Length: 260
Length: 66
Image (cartoon, rainbow over the protein chains, first blue to last red):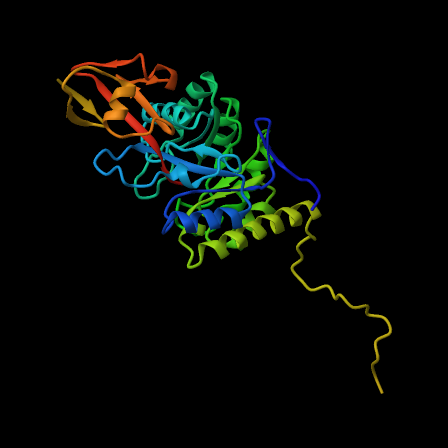
C-alpha cells in the first residue's frame, strides 16, 4: 500500500488504528491482538501500584516499547485537577509527553466534562504535553480544544465500551471539516464496519479497546479492525459515488434483445 | 513514624528515601512514577528525596486501559 501515514504532533504512525490494553483475558491474548491490529500506538491507564500483592505481572513486561508508542490515559478522572495530576504521573511512568486526556462528567455514560477537559488541556499544553483529548461529538468543543493547543481531537462515536457504532456521522464529518489537527474517533466502535464507517467519514484514525478485547476472538477481531480501518480510509480517499434515491442501470439500455 | 502511602496509613521505622522505600516494598523503580506531597519526584530524585512522618506518597504504574 502506498504510504499514507497518520502524523500527530510531528510523530508518524504507520497505522491509523490505536488500540487499548484493557479487559483482555490475559497478556498473551493482548500481545497477539496488538500484533494482529497492526497498531503502533497503544493506550494504558495509570493506577496505584498494588502494594499487597507484588506477584502480579506488570503490563509493561508485555509491551515491546520499541514497537509500540505508549499513550497514557487519565481514565476515571472526574476533575481537571485529578486528570492533570494523573497526566503528570503518566509522563513520569512512561517518560513520554503524550496523554490521552479524559475528564469524565457522568458515571453511567462516561461522557466527558468538556469545560473541565478544556481547562486541563490548557494547563497540560502549557506544561509541554502532547494532549489528545477524548471529547463529545461536538464540533464547537473540538474547535475550542484545538484552539487550546490539543495535538488532535478525539470525539466519541458512541459511549465508551458500548459498541453502538458511530451515532452522529454528520457531527463527526463536520468536526473533521472544521479541524486543523487530526481527528481520531475514540470509543463506541463495536465491529469492523463501524471502524470503516468512521474512516469513510474522513477522520484520521480510530481508537478502540473493548471492541477488540471483548470480542469472542480478540485476535481475529483485531485483524478485522485493521482491515476495516484500511478499507474505510481507502474508500474515503477514493471518493464515493453520489447517493441517488432511484436506480440507475449498470448495463447499457442499447442493444437489448427484445420483442419477437 | 506514619506516612500515607497510596491513600492508606503506612508505618515506617525511620525516614527513608524514595529509592529505599521502593526497595522495602519490593517495587522495581523502572516503570513506576512517584508523587511526594502532591509533587512529582523524577527518577533522578529517588535517591535524594526523603520521606518523613506525615508525608503523602503515591506510587503508580501502568495497567491495562483504553
